[in-house]
Amino acid sequence: MTSHPTTNVPPAPPNAASNMTLDSYRFPSHRLRRQQQEPGRIPLVLVACGSFSPITFLHLRMFEMANDYARMNTNFEVVGGYLSPVSDAYKKAGLAPSNHRVRMCELAAEETSNWLMVDPWEAIQREYSPTAAVLDHFEHEINGVLGGILSADGESRRPVKIMLLAGADLISTMSTPGVWAENDLDHILGSFGAMIVERSGTDMEDALAYLKPWEENIYVIQQMIQNDVSSTKIRLLLKRDLSITYLIPSPVIQYITENRLYMDDDAKSKDKQPTSK
Ligand SMILES: Nc1ncnc2c1ncn2[C@@H]1O[C@H](COP(=O)(O)OP(=O)(O)OP(=O)(O)O)[C@@H](O)[C@H]1O
Ligand SMILES: NC(=O)c1ccc[n+]([C@@H]2O[C@H](COP(=O)(O)O)[C@@H](O)[C@H]2O)c1
Image (cartoon, rainbow, N blue to C red):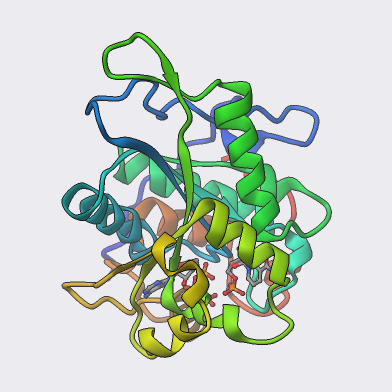
């Protein structure tokens, strides 16, 4: 008995993020709002950096929570949201090959949302890109190459604020010596800013204590419905041959099944070919 979908995952279109290489890379902007809808607000793009091995509903929920938070509590207008999977050079335990992680993020974004996108730029780099460099890349693409966004009255162009979207566990690593360069912290939290989703197991006050100099640029989002699904727990269930249905999007489950991901520790490093199914 299975509640998994039985149809095959569709192949990615040729111009999809998951088919891009360093040579063919183009910044995905198909869902980026090109004109503001609300005059007087500051246009905002949210960028979530992470392993996404695999992507879960909580990763997707973070964007919805941040969008609600921005609308209700700030003067920002969210005009786009990006998932930026880390490159294979990160070498974290449980990291499936980047082509698979990008495709899973793409399936999740395309199938469950009308505003989220996946940027494969970080994932396809041979070297690891620190988060500050990833945010610089978004700044360059959105405000440099695309020239920002058209104002609501259509009469001028405005720069878009780029902000990191992360869970509290990530922000708590910022006070761990040696994990983040001091300059990078200042660049991320001083120039860009961050929206932080609380996470059980992380004390928000402790996590923020070290980050006082930048507190005006840090927005803390409480989860009204606690969800502590994590990629680690999903991988654990898969290894034990237990169901992951209703924890991650069904096309992603289907993709994992078809590509036999997370079956054992070797599987992640062996199959580096993009799926052609
Ligand atoms: N349950 C959760 N609550 C709040 N934030 C979360 C949750 N799960 C993931 N995040 C955040 O999502 C971002 C991407 O994280 P990542 O892909 O490393 O996910 P993860 O589920 O924590 O992974 P792993 O279990 O492999 O360490 C991070 O900023 C992380 O803090
Ligand atoms: N120095 C840095 O820029 C730095 C340090 C730790 C984590 N990160 C980023 O945070 C994200 C999540 O990392 P973890 O899965 O290790 O929590 C990744 O995208 C990673 O690149 C960046």
